[in-house]
Length: 332
Image (cartoon, rainbow, N blue to C red; front, top):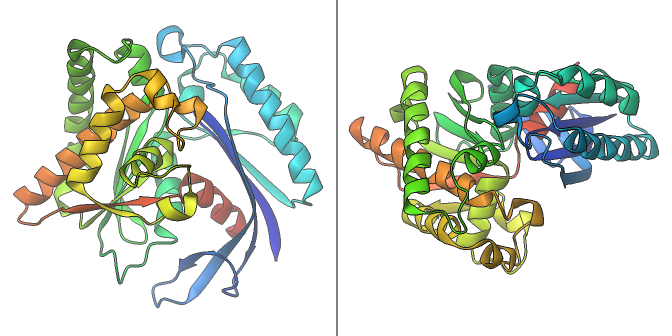
C-alpha cells in the first residue's frame, strides 16, 4: 500500500487528492486490465478543491497576476501541510492551461517548489488529455457504457477531447474554457445575445479544428468531466446542494443537458449564486462553461448521427485528471 498525493492546478481551481494505492482490488477507484482483472486501485483519503483563479487575466496579458499567484501558493502550502499530516509518500503536482500560457511561469515553479518540495510539471495539452481520459476511464463500466468513449474535460483555460476505450486513440486540446471565454466575450449580466453569439462562434471554430484530429462520430459514450459539467449536471438533477455521489455516473438525456446549459448561461449572477449546488467560485464563469458543454454535446450528437449512430444520453464523471495523476504515481 502506497499513499500518494495528486495536485491539479488549473486556470480556475487547485485540487488535491490524497489516496492509498494497491493492486489487490480493495479501493474505490479501479483501473482494469484487458482481461477485466484489477490492476491498480485508489482509495480516497482526502479530496480538496480551492478556487484560486490562477488564470485571471492571463488570456489578455500573457502573465500570471501576482495576487492570483499568491492565492495559489497559499493553497499549495495548505496542501503541503495536509500531505505531511497524512504521511504522503509521493507527490505529483501538475499545472495546465494558465501556466502554459504565462510568460512568468518561473515565478510559479519556484513558489510551488518552495511550498511543496516538488517540481511542478507544466504539462502539454496532449498529456493533460491523456491524464483526464485515464482518470475517467478507470471507473467506467464498459458493460453499461460501451466504447469508444469520448471524454471531454472543460477547464478554465482549455478543453480536452479524448477518444478511446481503455487508452486514448485520438485527442485534441483547445484554448477554450470557462474563464478564458468569460473574459473574452461574456461580460454582461446576463450575457447579451451578441456576446453569446460571439462566444459560440469562437467555440465552433475551435471544434472544427478539433474534429479534424478526433473522429467525433465514432463515439458511443460521451463522458463529461470537471466543474462546469458537474455543475450543469447538478442543475439538471435539481439538487438542493452539491452532492458528488448523485452527480458521479449520472446519465442524462441530451435535451435535459442542453436545457440546463441554456438556463445557467442566461441567468443572472445573483440567480446563480442563490442555487444551493453552486460553488461561489463558479458563479461568474459557469455560463461560459455551460455554453462550451452545450456546443460540444450538440456537435458530437450531429457527428454520431452523420456516422449512422445515435447519441441520446451523456455521462458525468467526478473522476478526472486528478485520478489520472494519482494512478500515474501508483505506477511510478
